[in-house]
Structures are given as structure tokens and as C-alpha cells.
Image 1 (cartoon, rainbow, N blue to C red):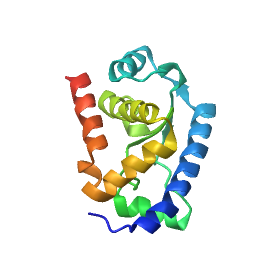
Image 2 (image 1 turned 180 degrees about the horizontal axis):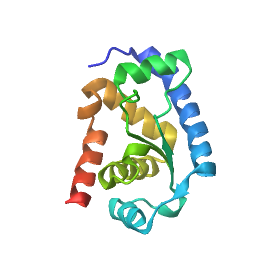
Image 3 (image 1 turned 60 degrees about the horizontal axis):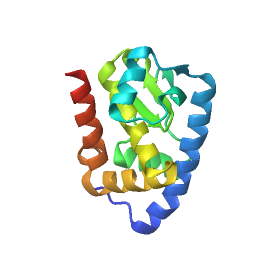
Image 4 (image 1 turned 45 degrees about the horizontal axis):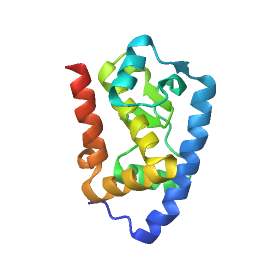
Length: 155
């Protein structure tokens, strides 16, 4: 769907991993631990280490400053001014208007589980970003999985 050529993808991926690692580090230092309800939700979706997860509320999800990464985020619609949450392994940015929205937090916890399952940022982002490029963000299989799990938890 999105036109990001393979050689461009190989340039973007390390930048995305570097950005995600830095943001996760910030959230882990400044974020808050999961509430008992969200701890239970994390366990329900299969997060191995829910005690590591921290949530950090923001008025807007940070958009990467690096021009190549910023353009890729915009092209894939992964991060925009309308984004309400993003999971960076154990760090979750959540828009402050959605900080108590169980569906949104459960959805992001599924991405935490996926990152654990794939063994870290690089393998997870390689698969997730490729799917977003190939199928489009809302139809990417890992994104659909997060939607299904969050709906199941909230119903």
C-alpha cells in the first residue's frame, strides 16, 4: 500500500529502533506502573513481565524529529497528531484524554506482548512496519491482533 522501497525500509528500521529504545527508556524512568486492572489485562493478553510496563500520559504522542523517520511515520499513519497511544515495548505513551480508556491500554499491551514474543524492538518493528507498509496500518495482521485482543478483554 505505502510506497517505501526495500532499500529505504532498511535505512528506516535502525532509526525506528533507536527512537523506540530512547522513548522506552524515558517512559520507564518517568512513567507510572500499571494499575491492578491493567496488570490483570496485561497478563490476560500474554505479557510475560507486566510489572515492567509503565504508562506515560502526554497531550500528544511524540512524533520523531529525524526527517526520514518522521516522513515514514506520516506515510504509514503510525504516528500523527491523532494518535492516542503507542507501545514501545514496556513503555506506553497514552494521550491524556485516553489515560483511563481500558480498550486503548489493552490494545497497547498487546503490542507489548508482541514485542516480547518477537524478542525485542528490531524483530518486532521489522515485522510490524513491513505489515503496515504492505497492508496499510489498520489492516496489518499484528494491528488486527491487537484490536481483537482488546475487544475480547473489553467485552
